[in-house]
Image 1 (tube, rainbow over the protein chains, first blue to last red):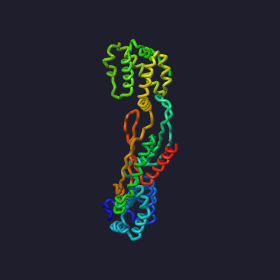
Image 2: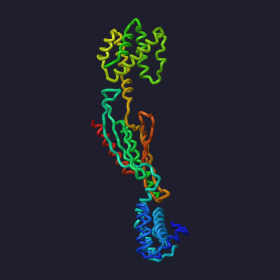
Image 3: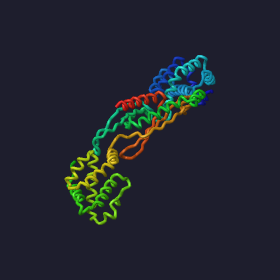
Image 4: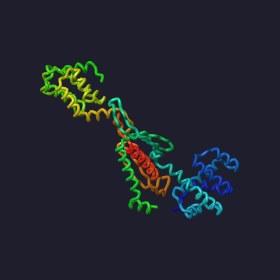
Length: 199
Length: 192
């Protein structure tokens, strides 16, 4: 599968052959750093001054590179496809090799970052539990009522939330059985076939 | 068991065969238990033809007194001797004491369940549902290929009677993690 690069994108990337390969490597590093932490416009100004070009040009160059890397990582395109996609830009052999290396080195990490952008339900973080016995309440004395108190830690979009819940031993047994069944499902032939064949 | 003068007066009236004959006494006693334990019971519980001849104010007073006493006895888990002592103090005859104790014994379990269910507690998990999915792609990331579980806990709140749900996603390892904690707490349960 080849990448489809728009005219505007090609224009932005046209800046890259005009600079040294070390500069391109540096831009690559900045691009990945921006993906990790968010962009920092001050960096553009510093680089623009050093290279004697406008900071807009630098910005477009870095952004073009970022988009190239993220699209390639998202689609998980093969080496060959990447090389063919970049070929249309008419860059030198050396630059093409550099871009390919940049892609392969950072692909895994970029995919991890992209996976965090998916629509997110609260996800499980950890669980603590405690066994209690209720002995009395305002309305009834001399009780023996066992209960399990559970603290569920969840993550959503970087926020950590906790929920404190309670259940009785019978329900706990039922919950365990249900979840064990859920886990067993992955081992069935049906699921195994799906995992094997959809790649 | 500390009971108010109102209750005591009500019982003294109830003890008097002149105000309440055997039949009326039994009916009132049953009505008291019914009002407490039967979710559908309403004011009509005292509308029995054999109770019509009694002054409604007296009827209400005795009914309230009996219900109050029953609740207090249930709360304190009173035994037969405690019940008998108090009823004797209110001048109940032997037969009426026996009747009261028998009725109390018959309804004791329901009473205790009712009292035990009153009160605040943490949101209580009642059920769990799960969904196993195989993630293929998102708009940000293609070719994902990983299984994931979506677990939903059905939770009940005693006060608000609301049924919020708690849903979260997890992968296989995390589900294993949950199960090993749950099994550990299960084993603790069984040991004790």
